Image (cartoon, rainbow, N blue to C red):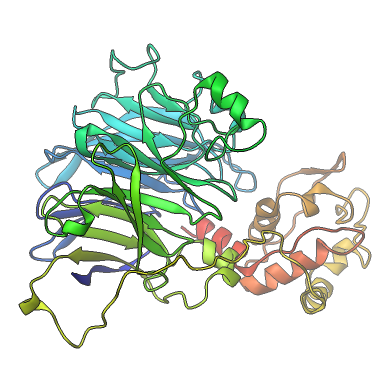
Amino acid sequence: MEIADVVTGLDIPWDIDASIPGELWFTEQKGLVHRMNLKTGERKVMLALDDVLFRKSYGLLGMAVHPKGNYLFIHYTYQVNDNDLQQVVNSRLVRYDIHNEELTNRKVLLDEIPGNTYHNGSRIIISPDDKIIFSMGDAGRTDQTQRDDFLVGKIMRLNLDGSIPEDNPVSGSPIWSRGHRNPQGLAFGRNNILYSSEHGPNNDDEVNLIRKNANYGWPDVQGFCDQPGEQEYCDEHQIMEPLIAWTPTIAVAGTGFYDSPKIPEWQNSLIVANMKGRALRVLNLTEDGEQVDQEHIFFQKYFGRLREVAVAANGDVFVGTTNTDWHPRFQPWMYDGLPSGPDRILRIRAVNKSEMIDSLPVLKEDDEAMELMSEGWQNPVGEEELAEGQKLYIQNCLACHNPEGTGAPGLYPPLANTNWVTGDKIRLIRTLLLGLSEPIEVNGETYNQEMPSYAHLSDQQIADVLTYIRNSFGNQADGVLEGEVFVERQSLNK
């Protein structure tokens, strides 16, 4: 096999579609849809969204091109309110006509889907019976994943015009299955079997076989029905267990089905991209497609974080990296030797021996999975960070908020014992980046003094001063990372 770049210089390619022979469609999370001629290499931006809300794990997410080349479907997040300090997030599913090399006739198929700063999904795929299959994460609303009056935590099925198929299990609803945490991949295999890959919490990333009206258990069941309390729930609700699960989690992502004779060892297999696991996993299926027979690991750590997989009809496999996304900035200790530079799309294809180039490195199947470090979401604060933050506090904050962080009654709010400081880090970071010019309420008292923007400070300086105030004046909270500031600044500067 040959592995080569087909697209470089990308910023978080989220979805790839190779369903049109000779073409490659792909997205960037910041709101761009690209179309590429694989023969000539010519590339065109087909769509640049002006209302996408892009930050961390949300933005332009799922995409699918109809196999006949007449429709494009996308799912993306957008901001509902005008308050950049406390954004309200929704998402929508949209269809475009593809006509004369342009996208026309935008039509919103699903709107005002409740969103969040995490777990918005998503993937889109066109089924063999010409329906839209669309996955949506729980959007942090775990109490709604089992309820059929909410769309979060579901895999959905719609007609191409957005109407509800008459044979859907819930009358008048797009819901096809429920009890999902955050599905990240969709693929159809032999016998039109639908598969999904799904993020677990700190355990039990899953690959599931998706059936009509089935329940996959979240949040009451994680992975298999093998924990105290889960078995009774599984029996009562007829929970579908996964085909395979991974603990610790490897961050399963995009999934494709491979059945080409070009790579016979991969026939009748699911190809699953891994972000945290930094590998491509090939899951050989049994003949009936109902079980995983063998698991193979390829390219571990070589290309870094892998987010998406698309399989073309000719047997070529396209894989998108995601090394520039938020995760390595928030948890740098987890990623030794991560490739630098922009993201790219790779093509894996079978070649004859005469086409092989001796000077290229030879990559082989990995014998075992690498050991994953703890995510350690709590960011411990050391003396060095506090010292740097204290200097910045004295220079920039002390005049108004006082040496002890008490502020001034009626003029400047206190920094001690307030949720504004020890609570939502996103709001706190954005307060420094944007400043304040409107009244705010702190500990029951209203303050209406202007605070200037401190966007001139570097990401590290903002992280240091916020870490200091979150751990001074009697406060005790985890620190702020430079990467967290970077993500918020990037979102505001879009």
